[in-house]
Image (cartoon, rainbow, N blue to C red; front, side, top):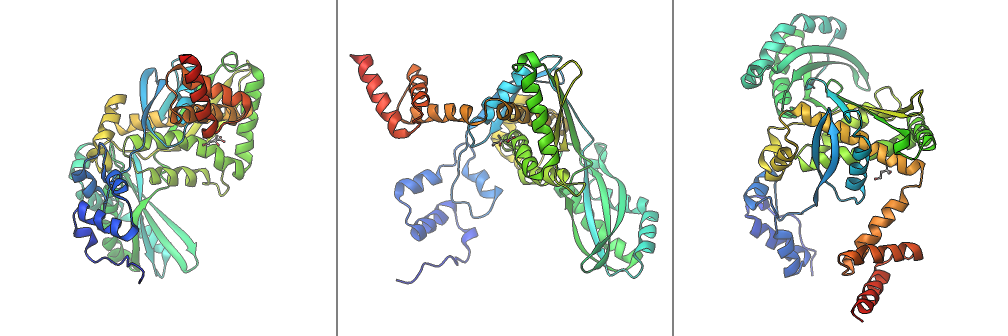
Length: 426
Ligand code: MEV
């Protein structure tokens, strides 16, 4: 039998049901599997079908809320969507410890995004750079004509930067448009402006234009979060010293910094998913910012105060929006914003910075004291107990026995559920 072909002309024009049928024919999915895949959960087929192309179904992730967060003196329940166990529990636990002194302080800058325009083949790049600066007002005018609504809200293109870079194919002049995108993530507004400005640049200085696109190194759109944690709340000065040493390790070593920052992103991306953000942009921004000096380092820092307590800070790009894109069309993203009572993109960025800092603290505390596996194993054991049919008190009982025996397996969970259920009945 010839191999089945993945070349399916007009696949995108078909209905979701028709596409799914083709996938079933191609892959041999069972009726039950196809039915499960077709279930769109709380998204709805009409919305799913316009969000991306070639939709054949949906995939649900759990939506949780982290409790205890006090940020800038205000209480928040923070929605988190994530597949990794322990993250929400760790965030809630850290946030509880961080409630003293008005909680976590978090301040976001204005929502300035950068649009890049790439000019090549300029005979006199340095001369061209000066000319472009002289056209600044015209450039801003052309850019702002593209988005009168943004301008009416106080946003729009505010400034330019012109850089010359040396590349494998010669010198290039890179024009940066600095755009205040207010409550949007901003990619659409910035890309439209960059495309509109580009032909004028060629008219004024010659050369050729290639790329006109947003930069995800959003180093003009930062969140800065800080918190004080008292030694007495985390088991004393030894824990403080361990966390400070962990922070120094990440600052000095890119191998550790990658994992340290991953811990921060566990929190940031969970909120990003719950609120329908472009989480790839957040990841790209975070990691490129962490490498902005040419060496990859940590996004946060933990220090010991003279009185033996701990202070932590985080600084990272946070390009998030509350209008446009998936935030607008996904009903759950809207619900997530409502749960937080978020009114501006700046406020959302401030919450996400605080969550990143809390998540980072939780990981470092566990790593520097009992290790990360103990907590993970406890949750894993509980999950297995639930999967094995345990309910109520039985869940913790089964989990505890498996941990004590160091046999955290589904098979053992099932045995224990049966044994304990029988002995309860007897
Ligand atoms: C696991 O998802 C995240 C951690 O590895 C973060 C860290 O090591 O700091 C625990």
